[in-house]
Length: 449
Image (cartoon, rainbow, N blue to C red; front, side, top):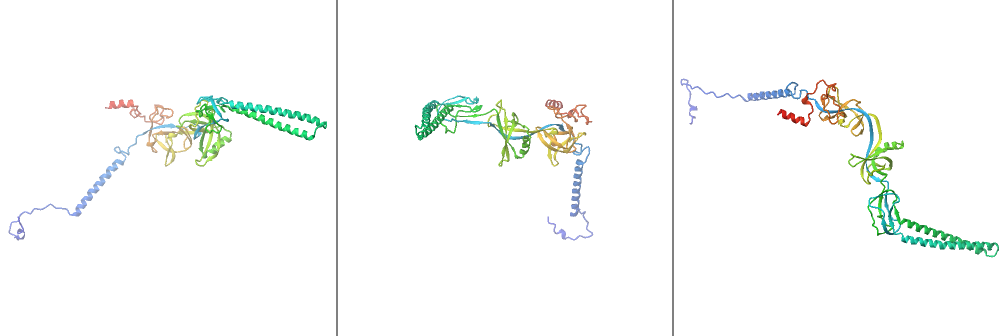
């Protein structure tokens, strides 16, 4: 309905008035902003209160409560002897590797060994056809006999000429010529004797024998073949196995320490380990150091000798050589598992009498297996953490978890120790806090269900 004409109708005083409808009052914009600001402030205060309740110490706070003791494995620091070892990669090398060659040419008649056999020095290895050399020996001996006769005749004539010369019945020139003839025949006889000796030597070369005691390899030439001295392959390869050596390398920085021990006349033991460096194969002694340093690798070669009576070392076998440089006696030692590295440097977690741990900075020396030398920072009898250190910090409470596999290595004198072994523990551990075996844990879960 169009009400535009009512807006123009004048209102008189004597006319009755209708009750006006008052609309809802709308706060001005400034007041609305104030209300939003007060609501935000209340939200911030509420959030701050919640955060404070969470962080503040109290019975309902999470982090403010006393942290539970961390289970750890420990070990005591002790004293003992430590081996100073230098480890290098090495190769088993025979003392002698010989390619057996023929020194004469001829047909290979037979071999006197089986492939892989252990032969002694002087045993027959191969036989070359000796018949041509037997004939040559006979010819040389015949020539020697002929020339020996000529020499005897020349000497007899010289003796007669000397008698006639005294009687002035012969010319001096004839005597002199006969003397020279005797000298020529003597030279011829010496040559013939050399030919005989050479023929005998060639006949000896027909029998090829083992130069050393060792093991022969695979046969390189079969019987029936014609072998020559110019052949490069040889007949067979023989290696000496007893004794045998290991050539290994060490960094050039270790040369001085090794040389000092050798110059002092000390015999240094060398142990050969397998490729995995886990199993010891043989024991030997150091023989010598090479005379130069390899400039490409910065290492020096050393040779060690091994009796190898059980043939445990095989030629060209890869081994790890452990050179025992010296033995330190009565040093303070700790398990390598206790050593930590971080911002303080090299440190351990030291267990205190109140079952808390502290960060103890130490200095270490040589390492021997699972033990490391401690030169400062610890004393014998100290207890250090060897297991569970990743969950610790300075001042943390700990409880010792017994090592059932090796109770002596991990002394259990903490909260979990038997009565009488807890001199510093005033709060025994409840049974439910003790470590449980899988079987006990399974029964406990079934009971709780």
